[in-house]
Length: 329
Ligand code: SAM
Ligand code: SF4
Picture 1: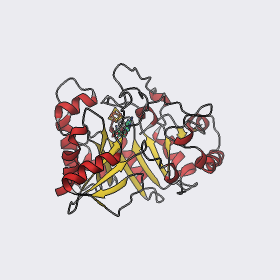
Picture 2: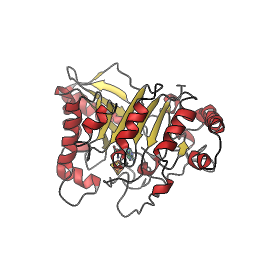
Picture 3: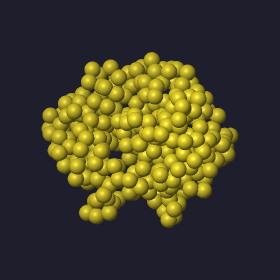
Picture 4: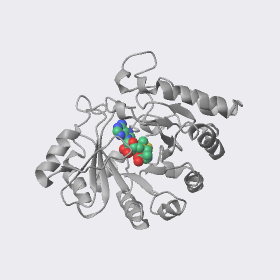
């Protein structure tokens, strides 16, 4: 069992995209009201006085779309400058990144994951639910800007959707041949709208590896990051290929993370709602941070028993009503 030292922090549940696997069309999400969001000061208090003392040193900023959070650059600066921060990263859809990449880098962010589900603007727009002028070019410029500014590693996240972008696996994998980019294929998870793709909701990573291997060859890269990706490489390529196989292979035993939602709920497991704590309300009610620390410590102790495997049993397990954008992906 890994030490749990990695906190994924959702800065906001809103998003400027409506990806069909995350915010399905027709679903009206109840956004968190501004006054319900953790303020910068509350978030920093929780990090310094609760999470760092119990051993968290790696932080990822996510959402919703984290670049929509007012003052995100200041938050990056504050978290990057905490002496205990060993690693700070962000997951973004990249739409606003071209204009923000340099400021984020200057504030201390070095690692970024950008979602890019398709190289074809039309398919891309279909996935993100865009009906206006294509948004693909802005995202592509955002990726280029991040690359030029010097983000390293620069990772591209691809959620593989049968019948929509699974014909682009080879083209997406080929992005890693001449660039030091890391493309990560993610199996679609039945969160928020599990019925979306019917019985064939996801394609196993093994199937993708076979396709890539037949065309380009594939070797294990020997690099294992912080996270759940199995990392491979096309022989001679500058970048790597990651496969995140939470549906076909359970990796709960290697889980090193918890999630903090934008409204301050600590969630020990993505697909299991057991053990959540409302840290924001406790903080606003004046509960001393030392007591919150004890509560988080208790959750850390029971975390090995809270995992995907039990998601279909128990009273509050198996509840996927919150989408990824609401949980903080
Ligand atoms: N808006 C940012 C973005 O899209 O990168 C950050 C938040 S998003 C919820 C974080 C990651 O979760 C993205 O890479 C997205 O593709 C992934 N994601 C969202 N819904 C998912 C689902 N149902 N299954 C698998 N991955 C999902
Ligand atoms: Fe927005 Fe990211 Fe969800 Fe897409 S995956 S709707 S970009 S939060």
